Every structure is written in structure tokens, then in C-alpha cells.
Image (cartoon, rainbow, N blue to C red; front, side, top):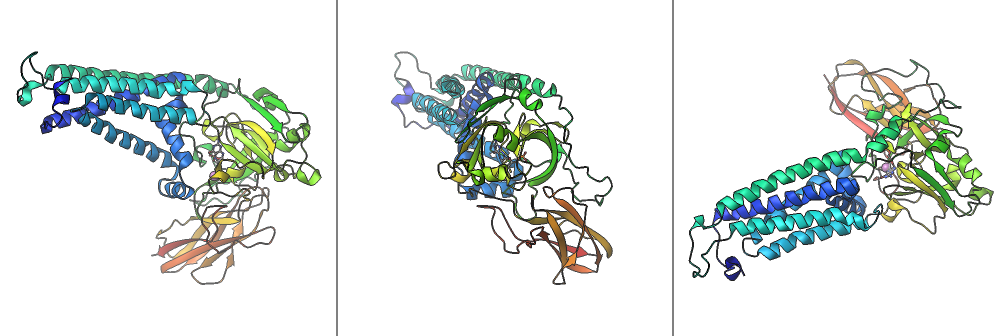
Length: 533
Ligand SMILES: Nc1nc2c(c(=O)[nH]1)N[C@H]1C(S)=C(S)[C@@H](COP(=O)(O)O)O[C@H]1N2
Ligand SMILES: [Mo]
């Protein structure tokens, strides 16, 4: 037994408390660096921060997720990871201080953290097995050993056989501590760098496979977007959203990098008389179509940014399903739900009827003329006009199972979101921005309106409590895309509220009734308050 463990109540001075915390922090850094380096070699998704973060995302109540998206937007994941790191840092420093009295207990505490990471990693839906525990275990062992060594240097030294004295502050092994601590810091930095290069190398095949893709010209191109027909006013969303500006919503803390040359898609399940497993090349050789389709997230608030329009190149899913023998329920098919599974364990359920009713539901390979970006689902994703992304747009897809709504609830449904969710008719004012200060005279008001697969019939603007006035609509490309609109407003001095509403081609007017995003999408009118100078 060491001297400190014999005298647990001896009070260390502030310097040693600090050094204890520092030891803990160093042990924490070493543990993470080693864990990430091993994860770089095993599987980037098996790293403890990503695994614990992923587990946290899956367990986050819908309301909290909604709040996080609202406050942090697409940065919600960054904040989650920073939060995990902050909690880890606090615990590591506390363990370091505990180690001043109880070295073995503190080291065991580090191992306990490793166990949490290992459990999280092996419990992920995309876990590939027990090897996913390796990063956390290796990291925890490294951290525990280091903490044990460092706190050992901080113990008061006594001559062998000499009675314990009340030592002065200078009694601990300064030199040993400094050497061990700086060695550990350098080794951690090295492991950190190693993990970076390893994870970069890990995605190399996938990156190469994407670079080598040559998308053939689609046999059936997208309907031409009349050049110059779209209004060009500053601040208005372009008709086609560039890939770099396209919103991204998913649960992946590490974007899956899938190698297209080894990727496979399996189609099977209820009513599938001819199950198939397709390769990327199989799809490339199929009849490709290009379609303009506007995608919307159910988490989009009224006036929010989670909507975008792209030209998707892909295979018509209905044709593929028909080849597999699938019939929609209206033609006697027994499966009413199509469940798509991704390589990262996401499950997304769509109505078979909608996918096969003649609309351009796609297995998409291309987005705006290039292979899908990794963040948007490379190599293949689904896109179904008229349905929110969470019930249709599975990215990094690897499996399609035909089943029923009664027998299976996919990921979001288990978390309180709707089983079926057609996109609601919505419109947004892009310009002027809220609290803008335009000058009196003609102010160009502009924005977008969408009601995918029903189409937009009319957009109206209201100034303050005035009458609804019709906006000018850009030419309709198809019913599956948003439509840009403009309205020249004769602005008068003072504060004004501009409100927009759309009418879809079924004649339904966008409802004024405000609802939350949960369970099936926000509704209400978008308003912008401006002050005219
Ligand atoms: N694998 C996977 N696919 C997914 C998701 C996800 O979390 N994981 N999110 C869905 C949701 S909620 C939306 S709105 C769309 C967003 O697609 P985007 O990120 O390409 O805009 O992807 C869908 N596909
Ligand atoms: Mo979404």
C-alpha cells in the first residue's frame, strides 16, 4: 500500500490538486487519442465520442432534438460532440484529483469510461461486431495506466523503512512527473495525428470510387428549366440549389464513406417474388432518368432553411420493384410499407402505394450533374417527390425490405414522428430579410413555395392587414419542384409585416394554423417584419 492510501485524509495543497486535475486531463487526452487512432484503423464510427454521440442522438427525445436543430441548426452535431468532450474533461480531471488519494480507484474509473464507450460502440445499429469495442478498450487501458503512473509521481516519497513524516510540498517526484506528463502529452498528440491520417486513408477507396464514376447521360433528361425565365432578384433562392448549399439533415456524426465498387443493394421481403442484389454498376447500366425534385425536411420550421431543389439522376424505383414482382396494395400487393436501410443503420419507411403510383420515386445516383456528394448519400439514396425526407429519402441505402406498416416501425416513427408524412403546402419569403430596412418605393419581395407532387397554383402576399395580392410565379417546371415567386411592393415609410401564403393545385390554401414540426411537419404562414426608411 502506498503512503497516500494509508493516509487518505491528508490534504494536498492547491498545487498538487491542480497537478492531479492535470494528470486526469492528460489521461483523458491520451485515452481519446489512442481510442481514435485505433478507431481509425478499425472503423471511424467505432470511436468512443462518435459512438456515445450516436447513442445519445438515438435516445434524444424528439422535443430536445427539435430544440437542438432550432438553436444550433446543422451545427447541432458539433455542439453534441463538444458537450461530450466537456463532460469527459470534467470527469477526467475529477478522476485525477481522486487519484491523489486513491490511485487504483481513479485508474479503475478510467476503465469504467472505456466500458461505456465500448458498450455504446458495439450497441450501434451499424456495429460490425466486438471489434468495435477495441478503440474504447485500448484508449481506456492507456488512460488508466497513465493516470496510475502520473498520480504515482505525485505521491509523497518516504525513505524505505522510515516512519511517515509530514512532508513539505517539495517531496513528490517533480522530475518524474514532468517527464511522464510531457512524454504522455507528446504521445497523445502523435496518436491524434495518426488517427487523422488513418481515418483519411480509410475513406480513400470510397473517395477513389466516387472520383471514377462516370454518370451516363440520362435516357430521359430533366425537363428544361427555361433559361432566364426564373426571376433574378438578389436574395431569392435559385431554382436549383447548388450541392454545396443544399441543407443536410441526418443522424450521422461521421459521414459514411461507402466504396461504390463493393456497394450492394438488396431488395427483398413480403411479396418480392424475385429478390435481387444489385451493384452500383448494375444501376449505372439501367435506364437512368433525370428529374428536378424538391426535398423538404419535416424538421423545417415555417420560414426555415431545410428545403432544397436538385436535379437528381437515378433509376425509377417503381420499375425496379415491378421487376422484383412487387405489386402496390391497390393492385393486390400485400406489403404496404417499403423500409429502406442505410449502411449507418437508419431505417426509413415509405408507402409502397406512393412509390409505385407513377410519380418519379428514384434511387438516385447523381445530384446536379455529379455523383451524389458523400454527405448526401453516395453512392445511392432514395428521393420520392411529395414525401418529407424522413419517410422517403434514405441516404447511403443498402437494403429495401417490403413489409407492412402494422408489423414494423422505422427509426423516426419509434421516436414519435408520423408513419406517413406527405409534404405540407408551404411558402417562404426569402427577401427582404426579417428586420431589413429597405427604402420607400418599389421593393422586390421574393421567395419560394412548394407542394411537391400536387404543384403550386397561386402565391399571395399580404402587407400588414391589407388584402391578399397575387404574386408573380416563375414558370412551373413540374409539380414536384418548388416555384419561385416575386411581388413588387410599393413600400411606404414605417414598420410593415409581409405575409405569404400558397395555394396548391388541389385548390387547398396553405393553412394559417401554426403547428409544430412534430409529428408530421410545421404549418402556418411565414411573415417578415421590415422597417421602410
Ligand atoms: N441514412 C440516413 N438517411 C437519411 C437521414 C438520416 O438521418 N440517415 N435523414 C433523412 C432526413 S430526415 C432528411 S430530411 C433527408 C435529408 O437529405 P439531405 O441531407 O441530402 O438534404 O435525408 C433523409 N435520409
Ligand atoms: Mo428530415
